Length: 313
Image (cartoon, rainbow, N blue to C red):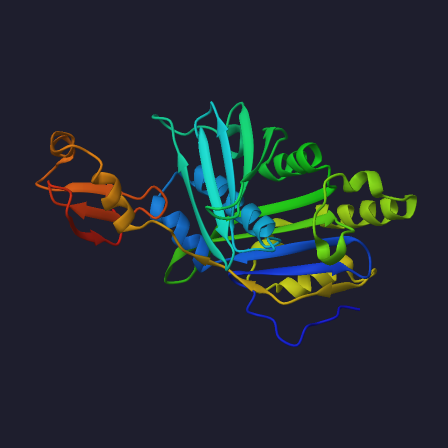
């Protein structure tokens, strides 16, 4: 039987933590609508790249939801392919953003092949006065979900299963809108679900049976179950784990938000000589565009801030 908290936020733009009965299998489900539509529409990438970036955003949101402090989790994939860099980060409190770098020319690939050969880097940023933690593993697998599983296996030794989905929702008379969803389950026996390195070594035979069963259920999750707004997160979890029982906890809201700052950009420009600033001027102004939200910041030729535009269109 599914245990329900007293109040759960709306499914869209939220992360729902869960636990399989009283076992050490814990996880998160994320459902994104307006948040991911805002992020992806800001860039207008080819669809194959948008899908990959949407998957990265789902992944970092589910991972970041486990942060026990005010900080940021940064996902970065770097390779030699057509999309040599994809970055997404999640800040405690639910702020999500993402971007990608593309090689010139037509995008002919799809999925994780767009990265080419390279590495996945996960960075936990606890703030300016704290040391960063960083894990680096090769990009492996046939999908970003498989690459994430490989990351946890190699970097953290934590048994993990991930499914991700990104697509467009069509409604009569309205423009198509991006949606994204993901589910991640892990074997984390630490108190409160705190991840510890090497959990697989702590698994008893019974634990292994519980994990194998849970991972198999997660693996059966279909894309439409993660994307269809008519299928609630609780319904999905009930479908997967009703035989074993699943507990859900308070949902965490997610929203698209960039941390770019005009004052910081002005401070950076202030370090340049007048000659260097002159070289940056186009149409009587210096334009600086945020790589994440595509907002334009405008500055006078002397570096004084003029204003900003919502986006680059």
